[in-house]
Length: 494
Image 1 (cartoon, rainbow, N blue to C red):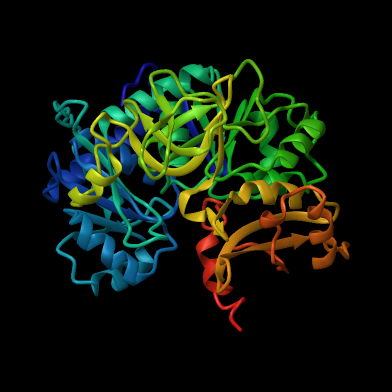
Image 2 (image 1 turned 120 degrees about the vertical axis):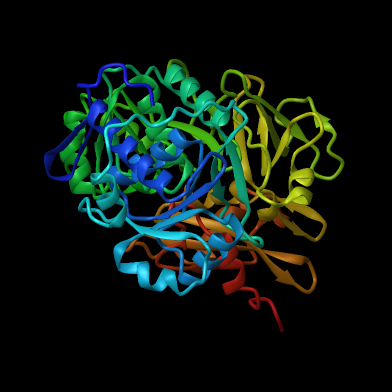
């Protein structure tokens, strides 16, 4: 980590605890020495399933200092899932929460177990506190060296470890700091989890690349966010953050006056949320597009039109194209729907110990097959229409869920919807809508279908409209359509 001004504030966390760049660098150095004393060397993996804290960020930086690969793991993973990740990543050291150490030790992993808590406690902190003042040997490898293993959600099979290099992380951080106009005067309001691209590699790395600072919250709480907004200049969040903030009476132009940029990602932002937030605050949320394997690919512009429902043009140095999902032929006509493919210094080097999967998803010309369907308009703005696996094929026709969802979400009384394909004896898949309605709404299945008949071709109409209290989401706010498909798989059986 480059420390330009050691006394500059890097992070202010819960309870008004301040940490300068110099203090943080010293903490990361001590952690690096503690890891080195446990045998961690360049090329090793260090796994971490720990709660969000300043020390957890320091652990990530310590790994970079040693040239080790950081493996952040979701704190919601079960013991069985943790067992898989530790066996697959084969880390030299695994850092877990103090309260879960005994469970983790039952896995039988070869990794040495250390603990890290949220109150500067745990065995790793005890070891770091005893470190000497001797400098840590600086990593002398190149940009192609492995910096992190980031496991995908595994909704379609075994989780894959995306191999992110030091060059991937550095190039993306520098690019985002530039296009989003970060400076040392910025203060980022950070309420995201740190086991994911968004909270760790986008938020933290952009701050480090620009020498700015963070207000570091342990989790999202609407009251805390509204209270901290007057002290921040940038906020990054997932769509759920913004929908919940819109329900808070304290969100207005006055409380957001000092903020120059609101960023949303990790899941699609509804155009209605974009418009309502703009009306309430005067700010147009900037939506961008990225994924575990590629970090950030596109972004709506800092200056210029931020189009609701679009994730903007490709970032500088990144190439984005549309290809036919079946043949792979590149599509050159604007607004042609196909598979989004990405190439650039942000794209991972492949999947950990999965050469066949790497070969299947990285083309020979360097383009990565994202699995997302989308189109690029005449201005170069990318529009995502859904995951390839979410495409519904009914009676031989392709139905893109986002088109049907957009019509349903616009109906009075509807909060949001998810459209899925469910096995159907006659049509192959039946278009099925799962809807969340407002508590004061009486809209029913007949109302939805009747409204859509005037807006959509008959083959796109949902054969059933089901109502639920909420849609299932993962920790980053993405709707888990795989769970919906499993729940309603027998819906059309005789």
